[in-house]
Amino acid sequence: MGKRCAAPQATLVLTVSWLVSGLRTPIRAVMESISSRINKVSPSLTLAITNQAKAMKARGEEVYGLAGGEPDMDTPEHVKQAGAAALMAGFTKYTAAAGIPELREALSAKLKADNNLHYDAKDICVTGGAKMACYMAILAMVEEGDEVIIPAPYWVSYPDMVLMAGGVPVIVETSESTGWKMTPEQFEEAMTPRTKMVIINSPGNPTGAIYTEEELLALGEIALSEDITILSDEIYEKLVYGDGKHVSIASLSQELYDITITVNGFSKGYSMTGWRLGYTAAPRPLAEAIEKIQNHTVSNACSFAQYGALAALTGDQTFVSDMVGEYDVRRQFMLGRLRQIPNIRVVEPKGAFYFFVYTGKLGLKSMNLCDKLLSRYKVAAVPGIAFGYDDGIRLSYCTTLDVLAEGLDRFEAFCREH
Image: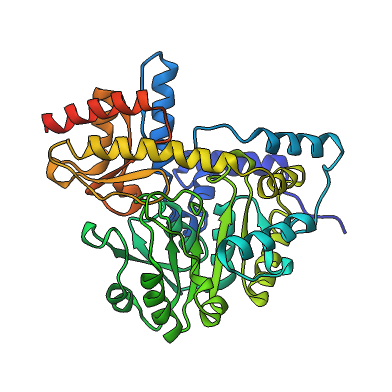
């Protein structure tokens, strides 16, 4: 027998009865049936600010963008050429789910040389960006109701990723006094029998904070004592300044290696944000779980883009050192200017390309502050509430010194007015 279908007349009567009787309309019924997990997820405030600034620019208004979350340099030429060559050579088909063998081997060598991490190529999964890598790592580990500890200020997507996986984000609010870093005491206090994972982002977004080896060891010992998985997001690894030093927590002991999922990518260090390439490195059982998720979601990262990533890893690294040098000049300029502005406080960031500015004395919550700053002074910044901390804002130096100078002049005028 064929499938039973409602008669057109019946469908018409049903639709009219919905409209006339005031019962749920079809679209309302659909809206009400959306997953409760997704209904818990917040829209991205960083994208909202960016879109508002773009709309103002489209109207011909001058906007000084200090909200950027990506390098303002172009992708290195040899990386673009490698991606284009792969495309023209016909590398446009599916790859192995975890990535092309050459790239996974190159990542294995990179992790050994740069991070003292010994992963076989089979332990590495190339993903559609480090964001996807984080999400798949969380999906691989978190059961319904499991708790994930997240220090705040945090990167905007961590809590929502946990919610989408059915977990419970447990936010630990850090402070300027600890350099925006979670202490072992805070970690222990936040733990419960339901704690499954802790997320460590070093260097961090939005604060630029870097955990020292000693700090990582102290946190790692606590995680080991309760068998808590560590998600170590190291996407800003190459953007480190002054006496700052990046340390991979999984490199500190075999025991920590066994409970850590390391996440990294190409977006920040090689200015490849639009290429959408990241990766996970994990002990074999975790690596296989992540690869299984990739198999049933995106299949594989973009085929020809992976050859660009291979060129980034194995080619001339001058671009990276030049970018770090340029950003350090901007960082120091911005630090000097911010320290001259009244009614705010700032901790010197050692990594990434952001300042997280304490604005509690201005008497405005961060959304209101950023809205006024953009509408009245034409300066785009990201409200701290997006990062779980409402008494601050994030300012980025992913722009020219001229834009930084004018934007900070305007920000100072705003702060003096308040």
